[in-house]
Image 1 (cartoon, rainbow, N blue to C red):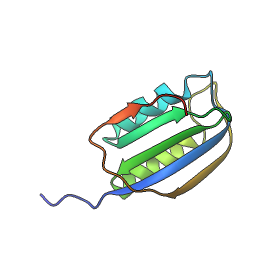
Image 2: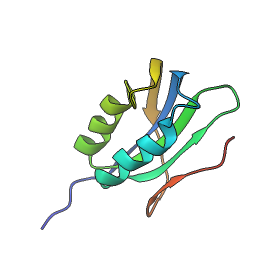
Image 3: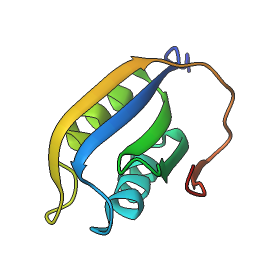
Image 4: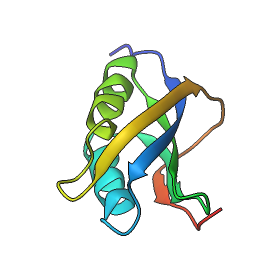
Length: 95
């Protein structure tokens, strides 16, 4: 079987995204989609993530991040290309 090409994206998610379970819900979704990378809270109140996987799975994850878990209120999301090698998906320490 031929594997689809892998892409990576960096996401900066703004809004009510801390203290609402965003990171853990994001990690659960990413793992279910077979994505690799990490997610963390930033001291500026945003959530940052790097996700890597097939283009379809990465785009589906970006779409999920636009609303997040039920208690979250996403007001903006910045998406840009990213690079790196990841072998799993982690919840990283706050930056």
